[in-house]
Length: 78
Image (cartoon, rainbow, N blue to C red):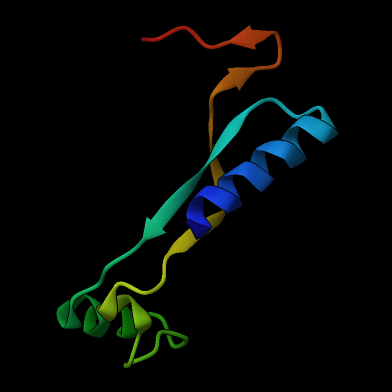
């Protein structure tokens, strides 16, 4: 599955660079026609025929991540 492959590659990249463990954030998977219309109202790049309407694509945030491990060790569950 593509998302698993991306996750594994992301994990490997963090390990190689010595960066603490983070999870990427999936921001969108499926959008209704109403969702697409609303998005097009404020995002000129949004396509009217978005593949999201068919569940064949997903978006991953490029500037936000969920920290799983702090630099000095695993985070405690809160």
